Length: 92
Image 1 (cartoon, rainbow, N blue to C red):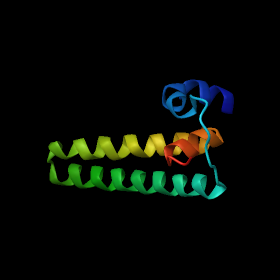
Image 2 (cartoon, rainbow, N blue to C red; image 1 turned 30 degrees about the vertical axis):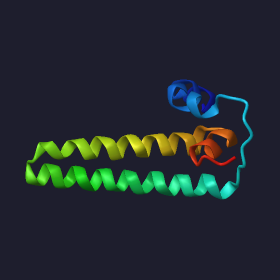
Image 3 (tube, rainbow, N blue to C red; image 1 turned 60 degrees about the vertical axis):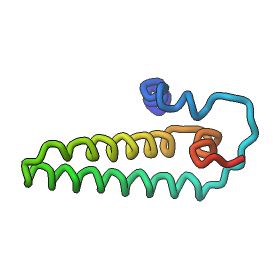
């Protein structure tokens, strides 16, 4: 199942996993990345609720941005290699 999901999300994972440079990975980086992804997901859902309630559909731009950031963070944290997690933090 993980292999199928990695193949599905390869356009997101490939930029972070490419290259031959050195990286410094710590397990806490993955945990923090999951937490940041969940916070952005909560932020996007809260923003969406406010946009719908206020009927101001110009507010969908931040909702889409927060949702994209959440998806990238969660995909890299849950499916990415140690190198991908380190590269999203720019750890060398």
